[in-house]
Length: 65
Image (cartoon, rainbow, N blue to C red; front, side):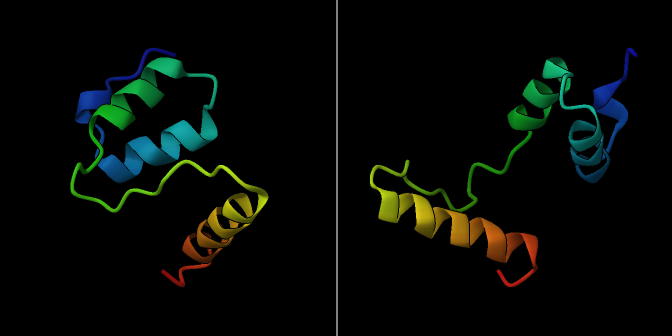
């Protein structure tokens, strides 16, 4: 399906990408629209880093952050 990503709101585009994970073009467009001022997280190196990052993701999904 050929979508017009520019006409979608950020929320609509994000929802579309979640439902259509194989659409690499949509994912690239979504990533180009990200907020460059948003908080970044370092790449996990150790198992403890991975667990800490998984906890952050869990908390974001649950609306705790």
